[in-house]
Length: 321
Image (cartoon, rainbow, N blue to C red):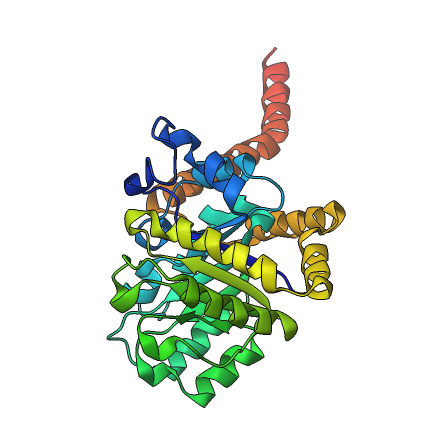
């Protein structure tokens, strides 16, 4: 049963104050206001830096059970390492974001526009992603990646290809997973386009067709300038509500209203995943651990030897007496 989620790429933008957010609403209450309008958010902050676990724990607690997060994968993995030798950085990323538990639905891996296809690195990266059981999507920005062998690899792993209006050559691509992921950056990647009602109607029809195919749809507006993102997202939601047939709407509502028991099971699985994630010890930790091990070993040795030594000493002392 398919579902769709419409939201924005982030929610902390000062330019939204007085336009989307009430003028007198403090920053710390912005998420609470945002989640009354939308049931999902795509966070770009994780692309630039990795937040502390406490931030993700707080967002998990502050949001309702049906709220979901999509995170943009670390640029260190996609832009610096270029998907190569990233097993440890991947573990670090997912260890930090693990407190989001079942509310983390998708991770977006955006590749740089100057990075050409490297099939070996992609295959290895996809294999590594299997250790982190959330939905994954690639946003390719170089045409060399848009070939059949890449689509086949992603399809076999149920990984989606992001569709976006910039660059325009990724606007319509093959569906390679059981979900579709679409982003709106603004014309020419300007982040400053106020989409027209006609454009939004076209997007609504597109979402409707994907839902008919049984695909979940995630749709995010990244045109944050002048608070266009929340404005367009809200309008798209209204348009979509009016064009979805009642039969399809019932299915999407049923998909949204998952039994709490199922969500709790997912939560348990997520907790197990946190425990299994390997984290490489630092040199300082290693020294402490090594010192502790040596100390404990010496202690155990002393304890084992102590009774025999005590016995011998007692006999000698008794003899002297």
